[in-house]
Image (cartoon, rainbow, N blue to C red):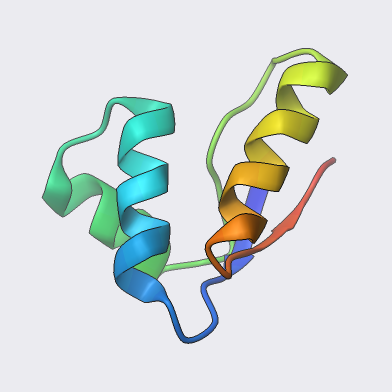
Length: 65
């Protein structure tokens, strides 16, 4: 799951990324600030779709590779 951008809702996207990855605040902020970046790798298609939906629901731009 690749985060390509965060739209106008950067703080909400950071919160969701933190919840999904277990990263600390600084690491999650760095990931979002440096998009495109992978959020999660080596997961099932179903899990990837759930993550994509959660991030898109708060305004993030995501793709699954």
